[in-house]
Length: 108
Image 1 (cartoon, rainbow, N blue to C red):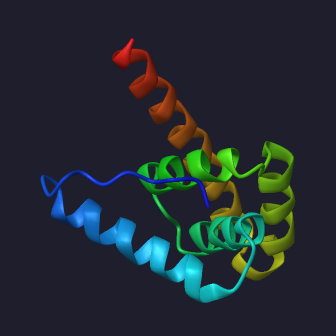
Image 2 (spheres, one colour):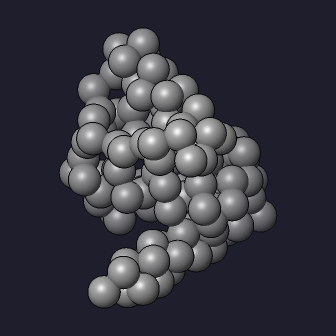
């Protein structure tokens, strides 16, 4: 999995989430790409907000997960999670991408 950085103790919640993520990636036994696609499915199923999508899609992209892969996952889970949640997931993913772009722009 691509390297993720911690906040040097200044953001303990973020640090804990990072530790949990890295630990679950190792323990899952899945390759990075599969692990991240499963996370996308979980984000959709749990109605995750844009910030969660932003954090996961950045790492997913670094691992070779494409926009088409994300769409395929959403198509696969749609019959299980329902139309409204699938459409909301797509919107939240797009908002997450927008947040990432805005953050990158503000750093320049």
